[in-house]
Length: 334
Image (cartoon, rainbow, N blue to C red):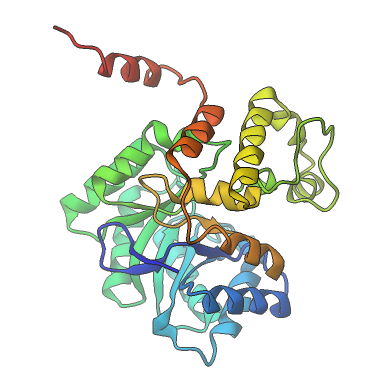
């Protein structure tokens, strides 16, 4: 597996990142971690709120006896971990408590990449960034990143860190896949300009790009991630995605998969991995078999024609002002 620089830092990470949100037990989780690292993977992502800390604990038990410096461990802070008023968010009090708890669960002295999980509108951003900077200076965190923010929020943080001499966000973890390309409107070029790495979550759109879904279906497959989401949340996700736009993307995905002799998952991951701003898509395998399939996205490339067809099938009309700016940017005023 290739090792790439994380944005403009000197930190090297594998071209795929293993997400651990779905880890439910040591036996399965450790088999997946073994398979990932045996394939050359070094970049592992978790969060304190995944399983209310159990994901970090499973990873921490696996880390024992292994050479810690060979791995890049990322986790996140924000989620509510208790019922007390300060058991969530990005205040100094919660971040300091959360990082200590994550270090205990992971059984490590430091976190390579510590990410704010979502924007906290109730806490001054200066407080959050100053606290993260202090954690780097204390040696408990090596780099800081963020997830699920708007372009203006990200730019505000980058500019403020630059002005105050604080550690900047070096990485963004956004939603990005063939069915969700809003990242390209502003965040992707912004990250490229600022040297911020992009490590997309849900590159397979919660299972929709794995080959389980085909035109003509009228409900989610039993045992799928979408079925689990519906059961847990009570929300109907099928209606949102059961559209001609979705099926057009899946038609093109299956066509390219057949041409290449790859699975739809591998093609969808390959498409994300080859996007200009992306460093490492986060794969969320729930089983060793899913991991093996995901690893099949490595070592080959889509042709220009295949990329163009996937781009065209997944393109969506741009909203204002993006459509207007895109159209007029190619117009010669003379």
